[in-house]
Amino acid sequence: MKRTITAVVLGSLLILFQASAQKNAGTPIQNGKDIAVVQTNAGKVRGYIHKGIYTYKGIPYAQAKRFQAPEKPAPWTGVRSSMTYGPVSPLLTPTTQVADETEFLFHHDWGYTNEDCLRLNVWTPGINDGKKRPVMFWIHGGGYTAGSSQELPSYDGEAISRKGDVILVSVNHRLNILGFLDLSEYGDKYKGSANASFLDLVAALQWVKDNISNFGGDPNNVTIFGQSGGGGKVSTLMSSPQAKGLFHKAIVQSGVWSDFQDNLISKRIGSAVLNELGIIPSRIDSIEKVPYEKLVAAGNKALQKVRDQLAAEGKPVGFGLRFGWTPTLDSQFLKDQMTDAKALALSANIPLLIGSTKNEFMASLRNPDLRTGTAEQVKAYLQKQWGDKTEAYIAAVKKSYPNDTRPSDLADIDGFFRPGMVAEANAKAASGTAPVYMYLFTWQSPIFDGEYKALHCMEIPFTMNNIARCEEMTGGGKEAYVLADKMSQSWINFATTGDPNHKGLPAWPKYTEAVGATMMFDNVPAIRNHPDKDILAVTASTPPRF
Image (cartoon, rainbow, N blue to C red; front, top):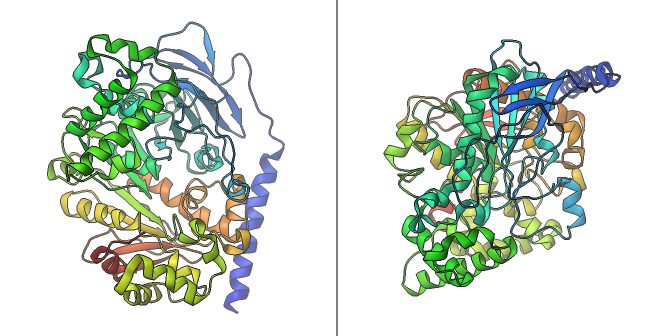
């Protein structure tokens, strides 16, 4: 009987979704000389209207010379056409080939690159109407070195804007060596170079404050949110005095909770780059004309050289430096580590929604043999990681997820993002006055016989209500649409009021370290307290050995 009722409910919801789609199917795109025109501080922009949503792409929010702080964009006369995505930040390694199977899931749109990439996109249900809609400011993933606002189809803001009567803003900014090379010792104009990438984000948030009213938005109700590297950027903005006051709520999806780089290290890297390029300090401005490819090559050599130097000196190689370019404690944009009381105090009044996915960078993706491996083969893999803690680890996973049946499930539990998300939630809940809400996305994708599980990025189509754009990743089935309806409503409600609760979910309590209330997002969402406490205890006491 229960299965029959569930099937009826799912069928009814799908009919509603199909009816809505049919209702909009014949709606033409509206564009033209006087359609969707909005005034910004730099000049007028023209977008287009699709199914009731005004869309603007590639709007300049700032301009910047290489390694220098962003400035207001140059004003223009007339009306600027803004209907296609703008340039994206150059990448360290341009894409020349892809893995067929995973590319089928992600369906990337790499865009075109240019160092002049300070652009943003806006989706809104109305313009020039005096309304004060919540603003959701999306920051893309890709660590601190790659990605863009158009990279994944799940980033599109039309669906969530329509559903929630909210404004979705997404942004491109400088990345990798362009956003993090510390040249602060070589002239005042380079004083912000170590965190230029984040100064761009601050400039984009300032643009929102100055201009979003004309797009029908409320500059005093801005939620910053992002996933992976974007989640790390959200946590970093929460730790910066220069970003304070430009946003009012925050969502961290599979972010990184780690220390910022010491400026003595970032300056050492900057010096090493100049040495690789043969540039003396008195000729520092010549770096502005070094071809990007040559700059990247020098940066890669400098990073490795500093890593080797630190190892030889018996000093730790920080988390960020291990992966490449990273934010730095520069005494301006970042004055304290994000774990310090002073940094936490900056966002004490900012409500936080935080979480990750069950499987993230799952082991069976890195080791395909594990997908169909036997229990013995999976155990042998785990022993290489956990040593004499293997049995305790296996027992903890089975206790947390008793319904898992495949041997690979034991190896595919995320241990990279989840501990940091819990640590950040604990610190935030203990130090601030604003609420914290924790989630764990456990829904398993049916694609490729379920082999990709709750992969890194899997939750984004659900939070953005973009299942229709992401069928390759989610399967596009009834269950996906139903869960997306619930998750996206929570994100909308949180952006509107700071509380993700709604009648489609069980009551979602505020998170505390003592109770550990966590919303488990699956076909049947449920609250569990400390759902993986035993796993975290094992992984905390014994770091994995790869």
